[in-house]
Amino acid sequence: MELAEATKKITNILERKDGSGSFLLSSPKGSGKKQYITEVVGGKLHTENLRSSNLLWISEENNKILIDKVRSIYDFLSKTSYNDFPRIIVIDSADSLNIQASNALLKILEDYSPNTYFFLLCHNVEAVISTVRSRCINLKMPSMSSTLSNENITEMDKEKYLYLTNGSVGLATKFIESSALSFYEEILEIVEKFDSQIEMLYKFLDKNFAKDTAPKNWKTFVSLIHHLMDRIMKFHIGEVSNLIESERRVVEKVANLRDIERWHNVFHSMRRMLVNTEVSSLSMYNVALLSFFKIRMKKDVE
Image 1 (tube, rainbow, N blue to C red):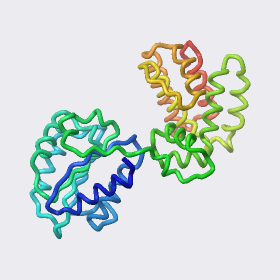
Image 2 (cartoon, helix red, strand yellow):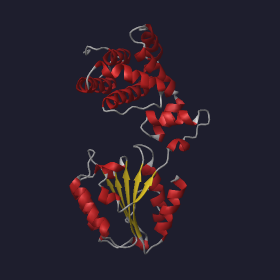
Image 3 (spheres, rainbow, N blue to C red):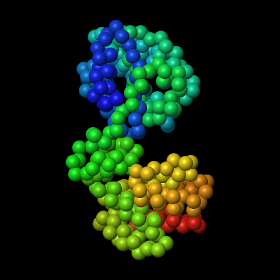
Image 4 (cartoon, rainbow, N blue to C red):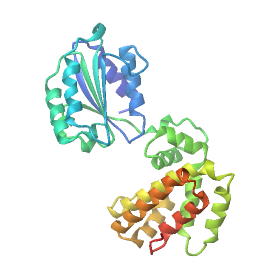
């Protein structure tokens, strides 16, 4: 379903004041669900932000939504609708509901008053229990590559940028501006040819992590290394992506250097090291260098 079609369906249902509805809106994390639903809801509540007595927004905490938050819906529904506007409940993210919270929500969805609408936002629709899914109109947001306005890159490259950013349009836009895809291709080439052309690594570090260039490149480097680590771990559970050919080759080449448990330990130490670099004023040059060695050496590097 196209986004415009989804919007039309939602707004048509919201226009019926004697009606009600539950929507399950799914798309990758960071793809703009919250912004989209805020605009749709805001239009119906005549507000440009999330402040409205007719709106209850339930968010996850520590990647969980517990039963107490779901029970707060009862109190919200007991209040009179302001100016006869729709009463709207947004649950962000519905795939973070635990089983008790899911069952409590199911009871509410089975019996609630007219002019009341639920929007369940989720990244992984399969993580939402089937009985809740069956009571919702399921809307899968289309690929967000069409929302990337840059005309200087191909549609395929737009898909690659969204892949690198886990579907985040905002981060993908920044990556396009900084040519992060080419940066990632350089990283992959170094990892692939590490044993035979180590000089490539030092040229890369000299170019991108000298004192004057390091700060502007660091966050992009960290994001891309995190992405590569994630792809190596997913390779071990049978999830292989062919979107970026050089990435597939590299992941296949290095994944078997360690078993999944050792990779987990290595990546845990790498993430801690990368996060602490700016806080502890460590040398970005040296940390980047060590990151490549940790990924490519069979023996774990301290």
